[in-house]
Length: 284
Ligand code: CAA
Image (cartoon, rainbow, N blue to C red; front, side, top):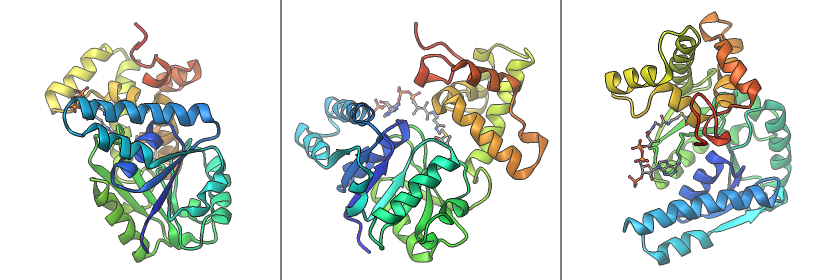
């Protein structure tokens, strides 16, 4: 099966990044969200990223225009009727994803692959709400998508070898390095990463050190590009909490219990960079 058309569901920080790398790789790409304001915001982010590439001499103005032309905005899920590959990147809520996957299963052609960018929800469970579980797969991009090299590919219990191979090749065409793992809570990436972030949040909660110190110790001491608290703000504290809850309930192990501070920040709407306030304040 040859991929010609990609349909990205969700124009937020992951969805617009995925649509950018898809269009950059030459595919006709539809960027869908529930209203035009969200789609236009996503397209504006992509255009800004491409403009930076032009100004840095990495791309010509013509190339930028060609990429923008390959992107089609949509607020109608029925537009997925032409898709060979759908990549879903919406909120981390199983009930909402279930509804979207059931609709996509009806709308898309029989050959279409339904991939999810979920950061921790079980691929097998998402696949089971469709009549094509062998064509459902986890395609987990990292934030910021245009920069980060990894696509963690998660095979559900029913995912076919053929679908895995197509997704592996598509990831390489997008300039990424695909690495597969099994469908366990948190997969490989978040099972390790969120424990580190949560531990940093516990340290902050206990007053072990101010946030800058915790981050600097991890940055300078471990050579991490950013500290765990700044990274939590980049990912979104609501996403961090939802992944920790998946780990906590999935393994039933208290080592994954979310820090009370994290819960409180989420209750306050301090979700990180995207709301201008998280562990750090981005408004000033
Ligand atoms: N979109 C596009 N490009 C971006 C970007 C964004 N949101 N943020 C940064 N960049 C680009 C910059 O434009 C810059 O490009 P040039 O060198 O071409 O100018 C480059 O990335 C480096 O950026 P900066 O110089 O501003 O800053 P930096 O060197 O500190 O890098 C960073 C920023 C790439 C985010 C780096 O700090 C980093 O790698 N941080 C760790 C990110 C990480 O761990 N991501 C995974 C999160 S987990 C996840 O996503 C999965 C999950 O399920 C939660």
